[in-house]
Image (cartoon, rainbow, N blue to C red; front, side):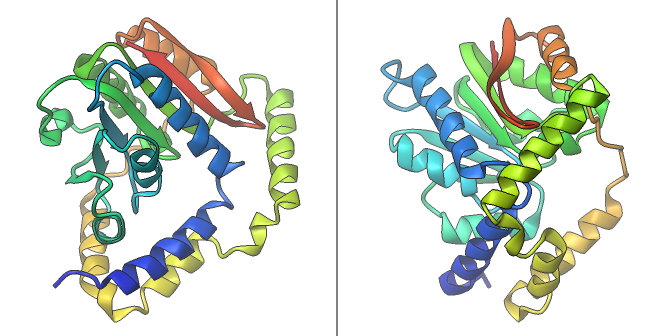
Length: 254
């Protein structure tokens, strides 16, 4: 049995608040990502095709759907709890796909009927190990149209340790001014969710998947390292278009 809309709305609302702790100027980052996609796709096609990688409960997909109502959005995640929240609360925003980003041949699961105009992600790809990240970049380059873009919003450390410390502090001060640390954190959200009987089966499936997943070790690469890897993977150009502290929006052009 699926989730009730009321339950999904409640947990997505709490998720939105909780996530503000972890992304500096989260809403502005979403807006910049949508700006880029709109600029790249505007006037080119009435039905741009966009993939949202690591979509969670549909936060970015829903915003893109509002900005680009004619777009076909394919939203991808592996977490059964978050996917079901997205399917219930943002049912019309996207077609949701349950697959593991970065696994060999993972793009086949997307069921694409034409090349992507854009692939977007926010605070998700940093979980990938180096081999999976390289494969993800390479396979995205293969399914994007020429001139299509990968738009990734995430935190990237600076190469220089002194600058890394300064950027981190700038971001923390911004977060403090916005009072986002008053919101519950990641652990508190999941602990509270564990007490909701409607989520019990989904949480059990989540635990099974986590137990089966082999730890890969996240690739904590700097911005410059990501740019090099993107160029090596088939993207013609790559660089940051927005930054606040160590939070960036990086665009790679196929």
